[in-house]
Amino acid sequence: MPSPLIRAFTFAVALGGALTTPLAAQGGCLAVALSGVAGPTVFADGFESGDALRWSEPGLPAFSIAATDDLGIAVDLDGGTTGDHLLELAWYLPGEGLYQSVAVPFTAGAAPAASQRRVDGYPFPVAVRPAVENRRPQLGSVVTVADRLPVAGSSIADAALWGEWRVEARLDGAAEPCAPAVAFRMEP
Image 1: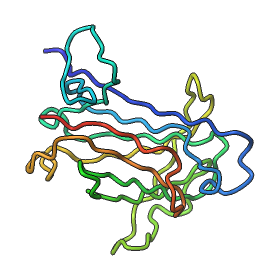
Image 2 (image 1 turned 60 degrees about the horizontal axis):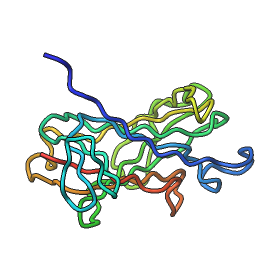
Image 3 (image 1 turned 180 degrees about the vertical axis):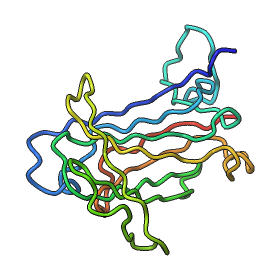
């Protein structure tokens, strides 16, 4: 049986200049990518199309709830990023309600000083992740922070939370996202 098709959606935002101010002040995110098992391509008018004819509105990336264990997210930051930082991922349900907000402490450029870190609002310390150095064709040298949103066995699957979702990434407690929100669909 062939493995399921994996679809990754990348939204890139170019940053100008060198990182001379904190990441949150610069914006910080170069790209946000989602991955999971591909669902149908659903266009803005709500219909899906399996043929080569594209409708005038672009489709959103879609992921199958039934076939996806976890929805992966990878946030690429400038390759010169170093030190300890905090990435917050806010996942929004169809209709704009917040489904879940997750704090991801990470260290870039060196081994973490501690394996865990206290994060405001969390009752226990959270594991510090190392950012992974990568090279992207259009972005050059980046550091990537990855996380997962559980789908199988979660309320997403149990309550059939289908429809248009979005995810926002914020760095170091910034009030504004470090890149535009990424919209996607969760489908049966």
